[in-house]
Length: 71
Image (cartoon, rainbow, N blue to C red; front, top):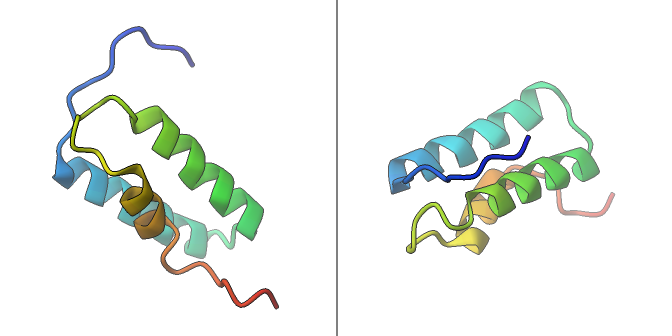
């Protein structure tokens, strides 16, 4: 879906979305790749919605529960 204007987002929006992705990915047992793609695509979509948006911080919060052990 392509939109021409981006809404003004706040830290509360970013925190809510990151938590939602993290919890959703666990609840529906997404694979690591699906989780990474979901978090990464939303991170990219949120760019430009707030000059203070920290994309790396958002991505880390959205994937904080993901198993990174490699096993």
